[in-house]
Image 1 (cartoon, rainbow, N blue to C red):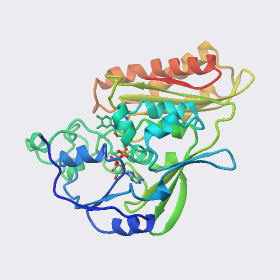
Image 2 (cartoon, rainbow, N blue to C red):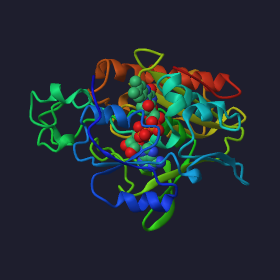
Image 3 (spheres, protein in one colour):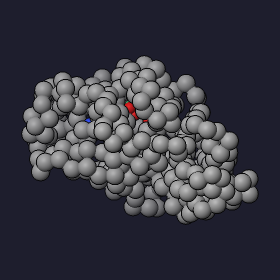
Image 4 (cartoon, rainbow, N blue to C red):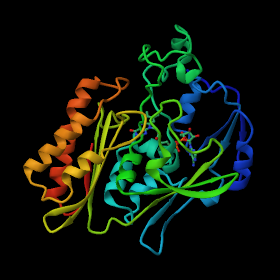
Length: 330
Ligand SMILES: Cc1cc2nc3c(=O)[nH]c(=O)nc-3n(C[C@H](O)[C@H](O)[C@H](O)COP(=O)(O)OP(=O)(O)OC[C@H]3O[C@@H](n4cnc5c(N)ncnc54)[C@H](O)[C@@H]3O)c2cc1C
């Protein structure tokens, strides 16, 4: 059985207190702990000394409908709570429902999902297995053992919620020692497996704010080996606006391809300004397949996952064009 390392634990009751605690070296935040705890048990964070639990901070809880119709989802909202809230866009609820399993969704939070660490076949194993080689880049070494020829970390973004929330033009509220700021969710991510979040280490994600969907349509499709629990090895999120038959605005975001959710503006441009007939959808799906190069660092081969991109994009767009509301399936 893997055991947790010996760590200090702090449970602040205010955001300011939590931010102050984060200033100390080796401090890590925990929300539901569903990703953090297994990673700690595998000794993926040898620098960790103190865990700051966010669970006693009331300000991080709750889902509120704002005056402009946006939904403000506190970072500590569990995925199960989001799934159950019928004020949220159905596509966002479906993306949340596609995460892991019921047990993990009842504990795992929206903030934790948006900040969840990138995953790697080499690193996400018990430390005793990794001792066979020097530490990899992400663990402080010099080599990426997934792609030793490259000096680049190939760990893959594995959040289900982020691609869908980006497609919905969501923003996030962050709080840190310099105060509060709000940024588009898309800007929270960078394509770097070792440092996939652009926020400062001592900033806390306070809330996700999702604008109203209006009469647009949105959906999420996920590829994974076992529909009951697995991380995504491909996620496709789309939002489409229409004027009659003509698509007026499109968002297409793919997840679990590289170290950040990847928006595909070149494919969105193929959809905008025209009716979405079968030929247009096929052309967009093929363009999406050509635009991505899945990292070879998850379940199933990158070749297969690349071939699935146009299939999943086409199926989702077909579904949205035929549907009057949002749908998503795993
Ligand atoms: C078997 C298994 C299957 C899984 N399948 C999926 C899946 O299919 N899809 C998926 O998306 N995830 C999956 N996960 C990962 C995880 O369960 C979810 O992403 C969950 O939502 C993480 O939320 P949490 O609150 O437990 O985060 P935690 O584990 O507490 O934290 C995750 C990371 O986010 C940071 N963090 C947490 N909250 C904040 C905050 N408010 N501000 C700043 N940083 C913060 C933590 O420091 C940590 O680095 C799976 C995990 C397991 C063990």
